Length: 271
Image 1: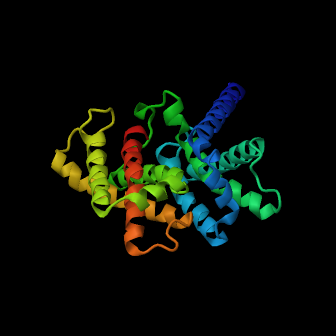
Image 2: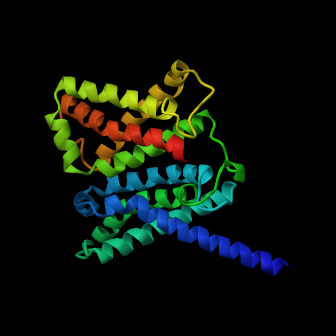
Image 3: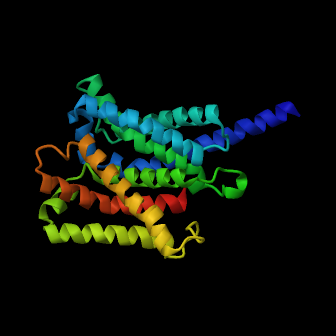
């Protein structure tokens, strides 16, 4: 009986691991096929890449707690899931970039830098895979987020969307072309959509017990603040804050916070 249970547990873990690779591919493919990310892997300053990786660890650990690619929970299991997800991210990124022949083999540090930048979003996808690629539900005993946890999930979604777009030249061009009035319009639209998507659209998972005003004050405004913070952080990592005056920096942050706000809303609905 014990051996049978052990074999069933092993099969379940292998299934979860395979799903994690699927989630890693699904979440990381846009960045894996983005030319700016290939260049930033070796062009970005080493201390920025290090900060990027270190900052990703608590984010991944939190996602392991609230989602995770396996049903195991607890401090040790969450830590193991985090490390395994990061390993899945590295393997997925290295394999795909090798197949695409975009790794810079001129030095080991260049290739490692390229893979490291891609591994974090792939690891995020690995941890979200169980919720998105299976029939796991809240009835399975998974943790419900507290208020700080809800804000954390919004930050995770904002960071993921900002991470996908911050390296691209298109985001910088949009910010360059934006007038002050246009940037203000993007800011207002971001807040409205963040609020409507989560609390007014009737999607499964939204808060039903809160009044729109209470939800706006408790979640929408703090959530948008986290979107601005996530956007600024991603721009700094990818060199998007360098050489800009205050007005240009604000425009870049506000423009990037628009997709980040969509990501924040989606994270609360989907994770």
